[in-house]
Each structure stands twice: as C-alpha cells, then as structure tokens.
Length: 602
Ligand SMILES: Nc1ncnc2c1ncn2[C@@H]1O[C@H](COP(=O)(O)OP(=O)(O)OP(=O)(O)O)[C@@H](O)[C@H]1O
Image 1 (spheres, rainbow, N blue to C red):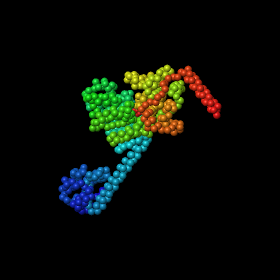
Image 2 (image 1 turned 135 degrees about the vertical axis):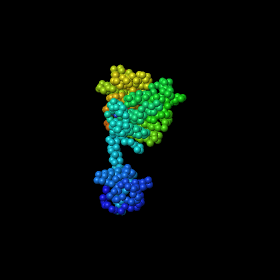
Image 3 (image 1 turned 60 degrees about the horizontal axis):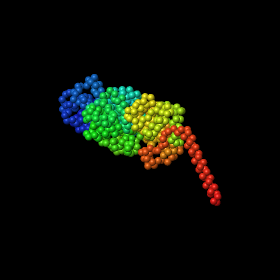
Image 4 (image 1 turned 45 degrees about the vertical axis):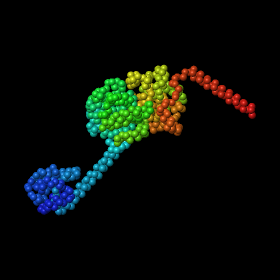
C-alpha cells in the first residue's frame, strides 16, 4: 500500500517521536548502529530532519544500507515494486523487517497495518494448521485404504511408491534399480509404512500377514542407511529362527544390495566360522544374517570371534518364534545377542506375521519410543488363502483322504506338514510307494541334503515336499498352490504360519487341514482363524469349549500320540473287521445270558 500518496506532500515529520512510537510498536529494528543518516533515502546527510514525505519508503534489511536516489518515474515504479515485494515478504517473513512511516494520523495506519500483519499471521497460522489437518486426513485415509494401523508418537508418513523413496529419502538409483529388477512394482503395505519408520531411525514392531514382503521392508532402509561398505565390522544384524530362512534372507539381501559394494555374510557353520574368523576378518563385513544359536556360539568364545559393538540395526525376524522359551525356543540366545548389541546408535526392528501378547508387551517396555505397525487384523491368516478342514475319522483315514486329493488331481507344488520327522519319513515311504514325485525335509537330514531338497522343490523337480515345523515359518517357495496339514498344527499361530507358505505376494492359494476327534481341543481356535479370514466354518466348531491354559501349553510343547502312518492292507482290514464282529457277538451272548439269569432269579 503506498501510504505516501495518501498523506500528500508537506506533512511535518517528527522523526524522534516516530522512533519512540515505532519502537513501542516494535515495528522497527532497534539497531543503534543505524543513525538517522542511514535512513535517509536520498543519499544526503540530514540530521534528525525527516526527508520530504513523498521520498520516505519502506526499507527492507536488504536495501537498508543502499543509498536510494530521488525516485524518477522509473525509480518510483521500482520502489512500488519493492513495496509490493516487501509487503509480500512481510506477510511471509516473521518480521526481521524495518518499516519507516510518517507519524501523526499514521498511528492508526500503523495499528491498521499491525492488525493486518496480525490478521495475516493469524490466517497463516490458521491456514498452516488447516493444511496440517488436511494432510493428516489424507495420510489417515491412505493408511485405512491399505489397512495400515500404527501406534506410537510422531509416526513418519507412509510412502506410496518406491520412487518416493528416491524423491523424499534420496535412495540411490541403484537400490531403486535392484527393487525393479526384483519385480517389485509397488511397495506392499508393510513396506509403505515400515520403511519410512526405520529411515527415521525409530525402533519398530511390525506385524503383517505371511507373504507380504516383510523381508524387503527391513532390508531396504538398512541398505540405505548404511550408505556403503565400511571397514567397521558388522553394522546390521538379521536374526532368523532357521538356517533355511537365514539363507533365503541372505539371498534377498544380495539381490537388493547388488552393485552397492556391501559385504553381506551368513554364518554357514559356527565351528568353521570360529576358525576362519578373527577380529580382523570380521571387520571387513557390513551385514550379518544368521540364526541365534550360531551367533551366540561365536560371541561367547573368549575372546569373542565377532564384535557387535558397531551394530546400528538389530532385526529380529519371526520375532515371536525367537522369543519362545523352552528347548524349541531361542529366548536365551536372543537375550545374549541383544545385550551384545550395545553400541550407542543401535536400533531394533521386530518383524513377524504373528505377535503373542507377551512379546508385544516386552517390545513396548524395552524398545525405545517404539512404533508399532500392524497390517490388517492382528494375528490373522492371509486372506488370499482358501482354507478347508477335512474330518478323516481316524489316523488311517488321513492316508485315504490324502490319496483322494491326489486322485482328484492337484496342482503342484504342494507342501505337506506333519508333526515330527518320524512321521515325515513314514508318510514319505507311503507316497513313494504310490509313485508320487515327493521328497522330505527334516532336522535329521544333513544340511547338504536339506539344501538339495529345497533347490529341487524350488526348481520344480519335486512336486510334493513333506516337512515339519522347520519349514513352517518364513520360507518363501514361489507359487506353492496347496498346503496340506496332514497332522493338525499344535497352535493357531503355527497354523497361520504353515498355511502362509501359500497365497504369497498377492497370489491365491489353498490350505487343507486333516483332523480327527483327537484334534478337537484346538479345533475352535483354527476355526476362528478361518472365520476371521472370511472362510466358511461349521457353526458347531465355534461352539467347542476353548482349551484351557494347561491344555494349550501342553500342546505347544509336546506332540499328541498318533498311530503310525502306514497303509492298512485289505486283509488286515478284513481281519480287524472279523475280530470286531466276533467281539460284538460274544458281548451280545453275554448280555443275553445275564438277562436269563436275572429272569430265573425273579
Ligand atoms: N513390493 C513387492 N512387490 C511384489 N512382490 C514382493 C514385494 N516385496 C516382496 N515381494 C515378494 O513377496 C514374497 C514374500 O516376501 P517375504 O518372504 O518377505 O514375505 P514375509 O512377509 O516375510 O512372509 P513370512 O511372514 O512368511 O515370512 C517374496 O517372494 C518376495 O520376493
């Protein structure tokens, strides 16, 4: 606004009074280095006498020391522009701004301006909070769309695309290229949210359905944050419950870090590593992927073979499994490793498709300002899996049910879960006899044999793979079409992970679970998981009594006794049927005899 036109020429300017008032209104910088001369717009030294009104103008710090000449037409325009710019600048900036104006009736203008400035600032504040609100609404809508549930404070916004990692998080083009080479067109929901959280250096507890890309979700931020190879020893550590899963994560890490120069290491054999590693050799690596027991063996050597002092990221994959206690659990090793990762900048990431309540509570207590991320309903099965329950009457009925599936025709590859390695061997011999293209994997086989079986299954040379819980978690076989739970799982969590070997990366899958009367204790839990995922379940199953804690604990620690898996031959069936008939006849006669005796006595 050009206030000078408003006043007209000739108004007397009481400069001293102006300065006092202006300072009260804090609209000028009280910088004593500026004497009145520097405020003279005409470049002549005038003490205290105000220049002619038409010549006085707003002075921004940038032009404060400039000597501005008598405004000619051209100059006037420029000045107007400056005023325009300055006023714009004023509404944008906070007010490191010196504004010289004439006194007298100007006070109202000053107040007017002041209230203008206040109004603008208030509007700016209102518009800023409005903008923030709108942004938050957009983020909430996006999260709802992708079933991303978050808990914690100051949670970073999710990313919608991998390109955004480039634009906003300055991911190297090489990582983006590796992502694209892996065939990943867009981030999965867990990747959308977990990656920015880890990039913000936050501890995270992430729960997402099986096959939803959790591995890349924790690898990508680590590869970005480690920047490149350094000779500082291991700076990232990923723990997995089984060697096969560690191998798989190792391969994914190599794929995503291709061309970045990182030294990624997997501990093949603890004893070999003990001999091969020295303080120096382990210095040259950056990322370690291993199972807890192998690592604990090495860090508990005297002196420790591997140092975890420089670990910046400790990732615990399949966390709830690694938290399990008892002989099948890893809790002790996990504790030792957790303590050894005591560097100043260590952050922790827990990933799993299921989180038991106690693990969740532990994370809230022990992780620093943890962000919890849940995709979809908690502890739910992947909804791309068609789940079925088949009642088989007895253990021998299961073999018939299995052969029935084969006769009806199935689409390989198929994974078959049994509860023990003994039963895996028994079933293997039955199916080999049937001429099925089958193999078996369990802890009694050597690592070489296990690797070869996994390779044959992945390459399609083997169509049916019989396995125990060893393959129950994390293992990513591309395109498994069918999972058969030949033996009932011993928990709902185990069930979710087993069937999660199919229906991965958005593909559909099918899971068939055999059960007999002996499995009725856990039937209701499994039926609930199925119902949650939208699969039809008979009403009666949901009404079965819940197992009590003792029963649940017993089932999770010991496998139920089951009859040997063996084809009962026809003559054997006939023989047992005859035996049963004779027994029934004998019982019938006994009943008749006792009735006769009773009648004769009366
Ligand atoms: N953004 C993506 N787009 C497409 N496929 C992906 C993406 N991220 C990962 N995948 C693929 O999805 C499959 C499952 O990934 P991953 O094994 O990491 O799942 P997960 O969530 O860890 O499963 P689980 O809970 O069973 O361990 C893999 O084949 C992986 O290559």
